[in-house]
Figure 1 (cartoon, rainbow, N blue to C red):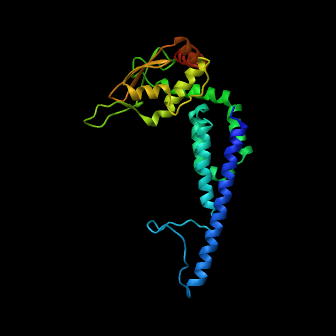
Figure 2: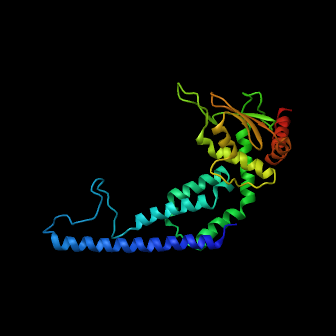
Figure 3: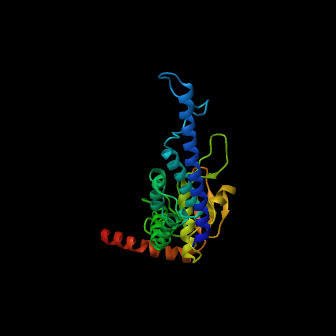
Length: 265
């Protein structure tokens, strides 16, 4: 659990910074007005303080927009520092991103708000893990039998994952993970780590599997052997079939196969 003392320190630093920014803007606004009153004649535009090259200017008289933008930056950093995304399903992570983009600027940065924000995700960790298992199951289970190594009904010992590798530019042969699929890599590692009883929260910005693929096109990690291909496919072999069995049971692969068999009958 995140330490309250750490959160309280971060909030104190932010609150003092916001207070100083507001006071600084007030002083600049008053200075602009004083200069305009003393130097300008008639209806000419007033004297103001701005960047000469970009001509951009903050509304120092009312810095609300600037403060909201500042809060958005702070909430983004807090989300990363508290490792909230690493608990979340892809759907919940998308919801969080939308909140950060659109609404977080309206949320005061207080100790109560930060701790409450984090507590909500901790209390719902079990539910989010179930959602993550379901999402990973859908990632690994194809909608057709295009790849012989993939099953539509439950996960076997091997899978082929399309687009998880970035196709190299013409003339280059470097194979790298497709970083648009970083959340998928994370979810896959988190789920198998959790099934192994080691927790579902990775401690790095990239998952073990994505990091390994970025270093070498072929190798192995704690739970997978992999081979990255120039056509954009990632071939995976699961090293722990006991975890695959647990994964299928939780994700409902056997029930899906039974339903398909009943429909066929």
